[in-house]
Amino acid sequence: MTLVEVVVALFVTTLAILGIVQGYHYATNSAEKAALYQAANARAMERLEETRSARWDLAAPTKVDQVVASNFPPKSVVMDLSGSGAVATMASLQTEISQVSLDPPLKRIRVNCIWTHRNGQVITNSVETLRAPDQ
Image 1: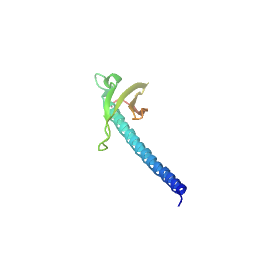
Image 2: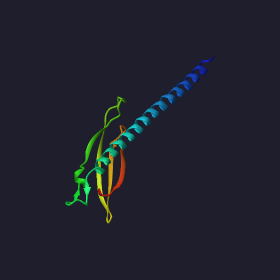
Image 3: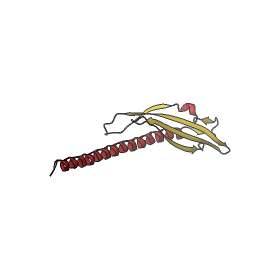
Image 4: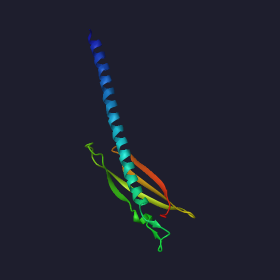
């Protein structure tokens, strides 16, 4: 073997090892981001269920409507990745409630979970549903 062959072999080996390391880095970042997406979606669904469980009774002697945006102010939450050992990621939950129709009474509830990935990218997970009054 000549010195040139040894240098070329080392160069090819270095490229292969760098490719493996880059692939591993990309895979772990993608897995972490996917887990954060799921955690954000779960937090948004929790808030959506809170709003869906609020009392809205138009048939009661005194009408009750607790499904209003002022009852669900913006809220900061921790997106928990239990067991991951990762640094806690904070998120902000914003609830939007709007009247869709008066006859039949129907409201749109939208919850946005806004969080920042460690690369600085701001990401928003949104869930939305319609709600009729309690009967």
